[in-house]
Image (cartoon, rainbow, N blue to C red; front, side, top):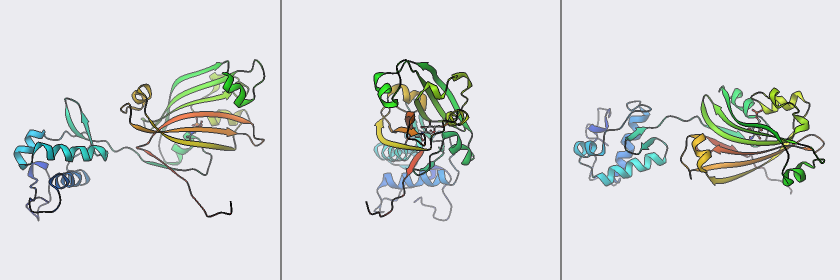
Length: 257
Ligand code: 16G
């Protein structure tokens, strides 16, 4: 806590650590920074004073200051840009998605009052790989559609999706708008159930650039296989979802099996 108990802290330069408190100094500093951010005294994008300046003003050591910064970077409250300093991080939206209902990205965003967006990376009709022939049970000569997209919520990149579907469901790729499920509904091929596999992965370089993250950061790698009512596989989608904005929630019940 800072020394003037009655006056709320408005600048980190006024923070005075308490050396007889059992709370480690770096935790005291991190708490003070958290309080300044929470109270709006430090705003999104604002640069923090330099380490040297905080050292001078608070008499804390460089190691303590760095430790506090590291802690808050880990919590997502601060960003550090090499060579240019430490900043208050932007507030990322947070999404919780239940793993019970089959919904589309577009539908999810609209229900949450967000603006869905798409940047197309690939939209092509190609010959399938032997794996795709097997998975979809394709006839000789049947093609597949490859849809590779970066998905946004309010202009923030949230996910990268690479979908493969038999071309018979989407004969004209030019007519596919931003929503794949809308296009499938139009050709009476809307999936009614899906299995989804979620894995933790380190973000590859190219995907990191698209999601505006660092390579190697943890992401959710999701594979969705969706089917028509008769069990025919209609969609195979592999996606990278930002793990700092998405929580997938599954409800568990005690059952007989
Ligand atoms: C979701 C699905 C994806 C599906 C897309 C359709 C996950 C992990 N993935 O993002 O498999 O293709 O919705 O959304 O939930 P759209 O109709 O907006 O293109």
